[in-house]
Amino acid sequence: MRKTFTYDGKRYYVERKTKSELDKAVEQKKLELREGRIKESNVTFKEYAYRWLRVYKSPFVSSATEYSYIASIKTWCDSIGAIKLKCVTPEELQQVINEQYEAGVSKSKTDKLILTIRQIYRQAVSDRLIIYNPTTTIQKPRNKETRKCALTDEQYRKIVERAKEHEYGDLILTILYLGLRPMEVSLLTAGDFTNTYVHVRGTKSKKADRYVVRPEALILDLRGKNDTDKVFVNKHGKTLTRDDLRRIWGSFKEGLDLDGVTLYTLRHTYGTRAQKAGVPIDVLADLMGHEKIETTRKYYIDDNIESKERQREKLNSMWEK
Image (cartoon, rainbow, N blue to C red):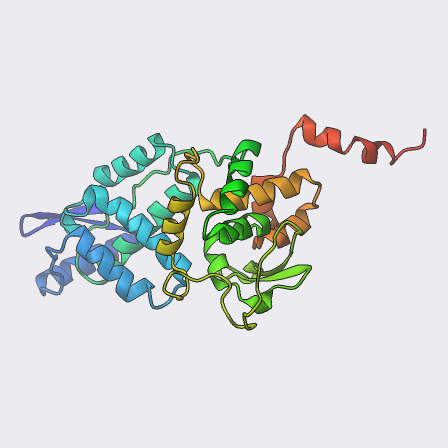
């Protein structure tokens, strides 16, 4: 429920779930205005958004989650960054979401954008920088969650051939052959590798820390490395960052005509090929480091006639002739 009122020539909005809560909130707001306890700030959205990230998020979340927030904030700032925090309207926010939808942005990214903007404005209200929260009326478009794209056979061959000559070719193949999230490759140490398994020290969830099968195709020269030595480092011998990985991938795919292919495409290729090879869904979920098996089912399980045909022999064997 929402109620509006005017104080000192300005219009204010209050929202609560019930009428009694709403009436109390309105009276409280009026009291705070009369006593001068609420003063709207002239800070821009961009200034406050990054301050919010620094104070309320960065110290308490993983680097991967922090990066996700940064990406969302950058998207918002492209449209409303220079506008005063208190002046941003619901229409402007909805327009950003609509434009993202029209550009084909995924449902998960759209959800992160909305989650981020709502958290920012809720905190701004709590910080008494604004009176009205314009995010409450944002509508989520009906994005369709599409199957993740995998490499074609031709793209796979191009990558394998380039890996033979590129200085970071082994890194690219490691992501591909182990189905890693890109940043997981930066955590690998020599001691994580045996002849048959690799310990992936993922941090996204409890399931992300896992052991995966080391395929025979993955040949790495680990001679001279101690168990605690990183397998892959940047040119300065330091742990790889996201920026390092972006530069490496940009250099690697140059001239290969791999438009739309990202490092994450390598991971999706692993999942897709494992599914087509008949790896059971629970095993695939474990290999991919998915917290929920539903995630694996949504992205990597074919629900089509080809998938059913592959199981024909097993289905026939269940019954007596």
